[in-house]
Length: 318
Ligand SMILES: Nc1nc2c(ncn2[C@@H]2O[C@H](COP(=O)(O)OP(=O)(O)OP(=O)(O)O)[C@@H](O)[C@H]2O)c(=O)[nH]1
Image (cartoon, rainbow, N blue to C red; front, side, top):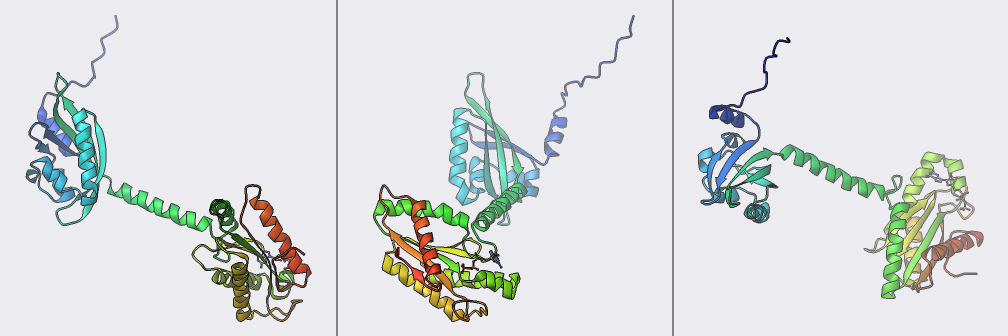
């Protein structure tokens, strides 16, 4: 007959002191509120280390509410009261005020204790210090925002990139269609840039791209205007609520700003400095018009400007 094995299951502990020791040695801060009187009947002594307020200073729920950051207070109190009244367990994140004026992010996890008849007897819960987690989350959000901005910037020149143009062009197109206002595009290409690279080298070529981008960006600096690098040595200006005359003025301003830079180009076929060719056009989009067809038309005008001798703007079909 096999010998009976010893029973190693833990026995229930009937010493309340053990539970108290356990509760008061955790990093989470336990508390209890009597629902009828809205008064604290217990709060763990750890609260003093975290917030600086002694356990005996936590008398009623008003003490709790007063120690919530004012921007979080109303929402937190309203939410917790509503959930408690419904008898629903809940969690709330809020900034608690420390005694010396600092703030700590708290996650309060609340259990609603109900009597046999369903009425609320008390609330018990744990406060967790989640400051480090919140700071990490904030940092991640900030990095995400920075990344978002960077992902719409051309890393070489600092102006908007093709992705930004591709995102905003359909939006501006629809706005122009809805408002009946003219939308203008100017597509820009540096003249004899291959020869520039061949003569001055790629690093200098990159610097030239930056300087051209700066001039174009400065020339189209209105609040709604966008200068984007489409790729290679090609740029686009998107000019919402701009008619053909105003678009030509912007394009001429960009060329003037570039001329003022006097970037030497010993191998240019147009002169001794870097120049650009431009195709420009304006449209009030109708129901039948297509944004990509219009862009293509402006691109063809750019190549007309190239074949007509470069260093010029072409804004009509020839
Ligand atoms: N340095 C540099 N060069 C680039 C970059 N992207 C494209 N290019 C160069 O731009 C030149 C474009 O040459 P082409 O398309 O032949 O045009 P082009 O020499 O400007 O001649 P036209 O447009 O006809 O006046 C090529 O030599 C590419 O290598 C870049 O990011 N940096």
